[in-house]
Image (cartoon, rainbow, N blue to C red; front, side):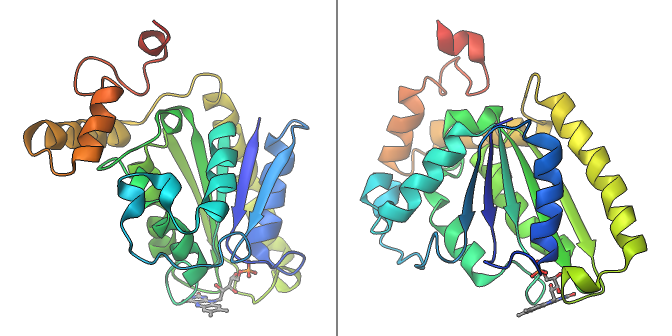
Length: 239
Ligand SMILES: Cc1cc2nc3c(=O)[nH]c(=O)nc-3n(C[C@H](O)[C@H](O)[C@H](O)COP(=O)(O)O)c2cc1C
């Protein structure tokens, strides 16, 4: 399986989220090359709010950083995002990255390839906050149109991987194997979950009725999504 991983921090050996991600990757990659990005190095800037991307995403002032990341995501079957909990949410650099992809939310110009992809979100906290952190990430996955999203959020009761209790690591390992099996089984034929399809139809109605941003409407029309084509419909796209 082709995997692209975006790590929320540069920590490796000591990082619980990194070590958990390695476990998933070993179970899922089947020897395929894994593309890796580390934040904040791979996206060292905040979104400036210039709005250029909503008309043409290649005009983003940070396109030199956005471009390799989006290309790697488009090539992958599975996207893995990791984020330790920082004050109950994703670290700032993760939010800064996600802001750069606002243009490809379903309300604007989603990529049809996303509707055939799976994502795995990994978050660890010392004691609390993985739910809200996973939600920070999941909102973007759903609105990007990612077909299936899985979450692995766990409390480590530790500040680094070495100090995580061995019994706890064993429990993690059991769940990692279970979720990896699910991802593998679903990868044979990836179809969007009900939530993602529901969001698509809501946004379609909005574009039909209100036609807020001309660039978005033109984009949706050019894909035939305001007519009978659907981003997840491989057969119709091939015709
Ligand atoms: C700035 C900062 C904020 C944190 N905020 C929380 C928090 O809100 N809740 C919590 O349980 N742990 C919090 N932690 C602890 C980390 O989430 C926890 O140790 C996590 O497992 C670290 O992941 P890592 O080993 O991959 O770096 C925080 C750590 C840092 C550095």
